Amino acid sequence: SQTMSATDVIQTFGKKKTALAIAQCRKGQGTIKVNGVPIELVKPAILQYKLFEPILLIGKDKFAGLDIRVRTRGGGSIAQIYAIRQAISKAIVAYYQKYVDEESKNEIKNILLRYDRSLLVADSRRREAKKYGGPGARARKQKSYR
Image 1 (tube, helix red, strand yellow):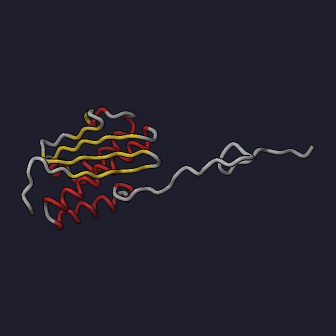
Image 2 (cartoon, rainbow, N blue to C red; image 1 turned 90 degrees about the vertical axis):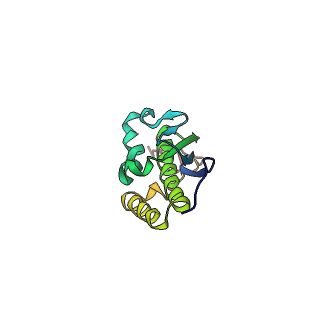
Image 3 (spheres, rainbow, N blue to C red; image 1 turned 180 degrees about the horizontal axis):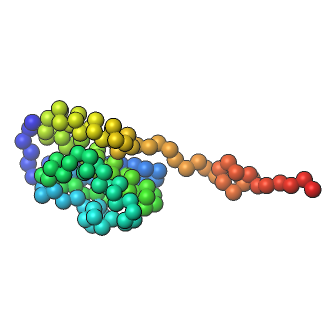
């Protein structure tokens, strides 16, 4: 593996619907922050477990020497959480590919993919456009024949 200086940063992104999360990964003390806030304090609290999934799956030791900063924009709170966990997962895989060895990268990648494919592969579904003649994309106004 190649040596890395303190300035080397890996940038990855995660997407879900219209939410976008950009993760910066560099050598550090193992802090993970989202929009400047520690990952333990991200709302909604019910979905915090979702954010910890990549960390719990791979193991805290793999994150120990890394600092990850995530910025989010767009989408709702739940879509952002899915985007964040994807950005974090992609960041650690990219980091291991660039600065560690291919073998451990593949190991991490397979663990994540086996658990949940959306951790590494973006979910391409989007909201369908609303059409006229009804309240939504498919639903139509009711009609009665009395």
